[in-house]
Length: 396
Ligand code: ASP
Ligand code: MG
Image (cartoon, rainbow, N blue to C red; front, top):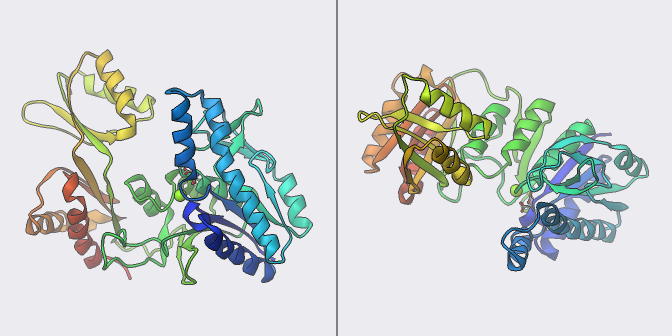
């Protein structure tokens, strides 16, 4: 008998029809003789509507109460899912994050799972139940409800799979797996049968939205075999696992991050160590500057996530640095392995951009990726262009 964790995201449980389809997947897996733990997200745009409701009450809702509110979305889904599974004739029970023993740190809206006490889940599985767990939530040491950050249900599923020593963690979504590019942008995108943890992590951290990047890091650490597949069709998905590809140099996919901000700073002296301490201060605030460089005028420039804007401005102000902030760029990244083994790869990337008449600003090349900054309105064109090169050097 295998133990399988199945996670259904917001779009996979958004209405009665989708919910029953998901429930049927769980029931089919159960009837094949497996133990099944189902993790659910809030239905459709529920979390967004809850955030809006809170904003109607006040500009700065207390973090603790925000989590009490946000956790209700998943609580609706878990009850409806357990009802649907029962309706299909299978025994099921729903558990909130805290009933499921999910203990987190106390950072509201961005908590990390510290430990899972699996006693209750195991008891329920032993009774023959399909156990439905609310994603995205847990409790801290003081028993306050916490949530794990947007998209955090993936992390719930992976953490449960790790704690329960599950044989597989299946993430059901509205695409059929991981592609060489977003299939909604690039028609010729190819579905991957497998991808390594490292490559998936790189894609997720460079903008691919299929999986929460923290969940991929967690899966790698716990050696959890992850499978991304469609909740709508029956086709095979993509498996994320260790060394799933041969060691040969190859490109695996291209993604876009449309939310980067580019900063140009005057007065930071590279030689005097000013740059070094500045980067260290950013790192301490959890900010990783990317595409870092210096122009002839001595200006330092870098990009960072839009969500870190306030924090970066605070640090720059404290240092009395003159900055220019540009919120017009998108970072396009091609991900792969041993890229420097291709002698002309960089040239190939620039050639396709040139052919498509896409001007670019900064660029970066290392073993596992090539990134380039283009105007946000040209992001899709640039994804198309780089994708041609990806297909040329893609391992089939
Ligand atoms: N419902 C939460 C969100 O919308 C968590 C998730 O979907 O994974 O971010
Ligand atoms: Mg998601």
